[in-house]
Length: 335
Image (cartoon, rainbow, N blue to C red; front, side, top):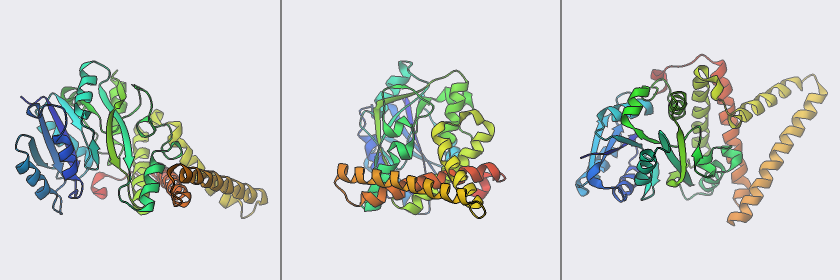
């Protein structure tokens, strides 16, 4: 009897999907009570072949592929939930590797009533073995890059505003209306807003751990955080009170620089203020880079970490401002 359904949205993940499926196969949770549903956005690489090979080599693990014709994450999640047979839904990502007790701990937290959507912490690792990939992974898990997001920087078990991926009862998700398919990103945060509005609790347990592979280049990182910022702005149109201080700082910083840059053409003081702010910002990032370099014995972090954090700040901040000012786009324009 299937008790838990692992759902995974994916698209062109031939390089990572096998290690995820292998990690699911080695979970401490009983395979006879587990199924894996992969909502594939009609991949154009060998993703489906890799999944089929895993299915053939692991016949004792139920693995199903369903089509995600809209090719966006929230629609893939919803189609997978609809197809799920399990009482519990465990969401995972093709770029992650859950530790062996991940599913067991998630279901224990749900059954013990700790939360209505439960999750853990990311152990963020480099996506590649390059110096920039190492710097990006460290930046994404540092408070200057992640703010107070406990699932990135760690913390004690507690109620939080959001968790990565999440595990919840299928009936509860259906009752909430599942994931908002008008959001291409931040669909998990928006889901958790509705969990809390319904009187539920979002619970983070640091013993629930998974490895998450960060982006490998500044270009990929910039695209990721631009997407995060833009779609956060669209979510804020509906839930303005959900804006956290950590999310507000980058757009305010960017806006301040833009205003001072414009004023500096005719105002000498604005020119000085702009220079001071930029220099102080660069100094803080440079000192952090030195600290990280000594801590991890890697001289490339002196440059890499400041570049990665600046990319996060400016991409997120600019995109959120643009998302607030620009006319909202629909899904079909963002496939």
